Length: 555
Image (tube, rainbow, N blue to C red):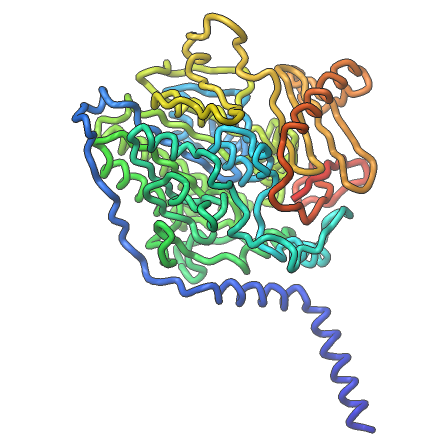
């Protein structure tokens, strides 16, 4: 019987060790699983298609080229025109788009997380109209985050949780259905050559990949590292307090693909690579109308920066902030190189350039002022989560230095680009975006000077509606008591004072509008797996305090 006792002791010790190191074992398993999804081949040289305008028109006689540049998780305060990462960095080239064009001071992302915003940009309407309510995540990610969080100093707050193992759709099946008419499809029908570079996050299977959704050429971000982990010229910052960060370091690789082809390794730091290829696209298409959708990954986590940018910011003492700021420095430089390429080829006057972010800055990077002066973060519907830099430049039509103060939305970029190209919006479905050019040029002589009576936002338990002045935020967990706030956005300190009890008629009107909007939306194409309260005021590096306010979020 001695051997049996020894075996039991060994089994108990093995089990105890496995329990103690369960997170490390799980992350190792994720890393091995992702590595098994196919070899990453050597760098490929993309040969971008070239062509000429079929009607032989000069550049100033053709329909305008359209360039849409999208940053990922860029906070309001990340641009120097708004503050500059706590006043530690300049973004002169992005700021120049505003100085030479129009700033939409109340520009809104479609959602507090990335993919639904991208769906609105590409479809011209609320993603919830076709069931795109939640950001696609790989099966098991919710379970993994909860496991990692359980060993963090600040674990996920109690919420509703669904076991997503074995029941969720495949990650590549979660996306925008081919029945949607993308901006690329609309412009291609007008004779535009259409190119996508970077992140997509709108599905890959069943006709949902970018090269099946109207883009003739697509250089896809196939995973999410900015550089090789062994590259001495790439500096990283890892946040042990953030379960998402720990998951990403295990799950992501350094990979790209072209038009659905095999994976290959990018030749350089990702932001620089996308910029270089965008410049090559402009050169290849200088003689015909083109639409370039440049969807940068920066400055989304994992935080990796080029050493030269990191070294240039030695006045920043906090390491993660310095890496983050260095990533934005690279992004800004890249925007400038794109603008320079347009000028080099004589295209800058007749090109509509639009710049925005998919949502606000993330609280989980541990930088408390990333969205100042707005309250909240990515993964909330407070202003910090959905207010986004929203800029456009088109010298042929828009006067430099214009500021437009009414609320506008991501789907307006779709409608604005369509109108610029002379493309009629689809008439067989509800389209939510409007052409903004008549508003900023003063051409709107009749009717409302505000593009939208209401704007709506929804991600499961999180919902919000705003009009020109008032905003109602609703936190409605599937289990538990609903909480709501009413804010006067004309206040000098918006979203700081809850006026719900003082303006019941306004609350009733906004709730009625929200209910009517929700009644028109489709059921989600895939379910949420986690609904949890998010601390509205403290970033993830800070411990919760008893009087903190929380808003539930579903994804």
